Image 1 (spheres, helix red, strand yellow):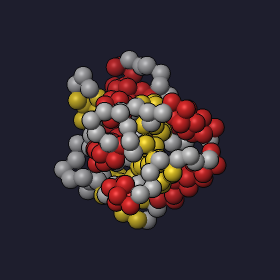
Image 2 (cartoon, one colour; image 1 turned 180 degrees about the horizontal axis):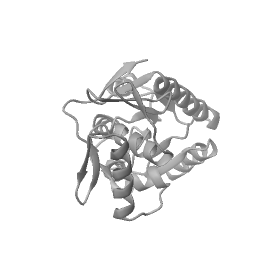
Image 3 (cartoon, helix red, strand yellow; image 1 turned 45 degrees about the horizontal axis):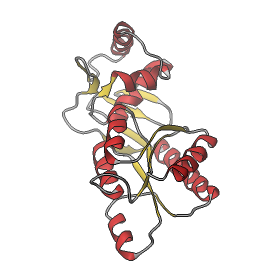
Image 4 (cartoon, one colour; image 1 turned 135 degrees about the horizontal axis):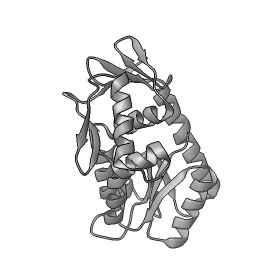
Length: 231
């Protein structure tokens, strides 16, 4: 499983150290920023799996506050990095649901182990989840299959990537840039190509709740938030 990582760190040497470790493990670094403003700009345009953030960053908000906003808005996972281990800092960090906490200076293998554990946990959770999108459609992550009632909807690789991007957005808009990256590996494609993909998908899945937001992208149009059912 390849994950997309956003790094928030204002110490250049530490940031490069983190980036190197993430890339060596075969994952993608969406960006390295020093402040919440930079983090929000990247998260708005990309689908982020994991944020690795220092607690003390540049700007008006702390790393904890920044990560809390990112988690609430984009449902990202978090690893905190800090030079502080005092009780007050730990209390503030505990207000956010993080998956790891590293104290500077940390070794490369410590971060590597934390990243590997996150990937294993994510794969296990994904395999056990089935998203109920509405009364007609559900998606099984383990089988990578879309169901219309009890009937399987056979999707191409591109159609499945499109569906995963929409599900991960959880009702938010999947921008054209994010769609291009997730479906066509970052290659810029025309509006016609995107429309053709959507058209083919909806031929296989009639009345599937995809909505075009003109000039912005696509989203799932649901009467209720999708919920998870364990298989």
